[in-house]
Image 1 (cartoon, helix red, strand yellow):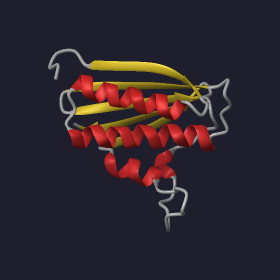
Image 2: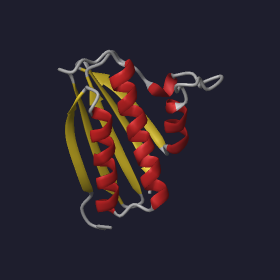
Image 3: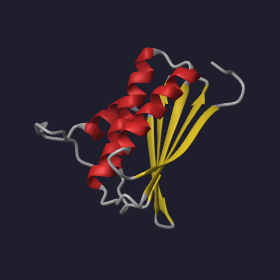
Length: 135
């Protein structure tokens, strides 16, 4: 791992069916490059997959909309930043699932469980979600 400057990957994804796979591939490549141990690498992949899938499947974004994704490796942790123009939604306020439906529903609970911290804001019509993960 680089102990000097943070390792950073940034990309913009079309909010379409290919976004989840592209984001997951970027997260896995980043984890390898950043020297993440297997546990933090898996948690990062799950968080990226869940959050991007939620944007594509539930946020009302169209294929012409974009999702900004940044991954930053600092000593001891990784920061994931997502930006989008969907309706404001603070995942910290989403109620936990009372049961797990057969086709999902536990994604945000996983994100909250795996994250050290989550910060959300909306400004100028853009959501900004920052998730800090130990690693």
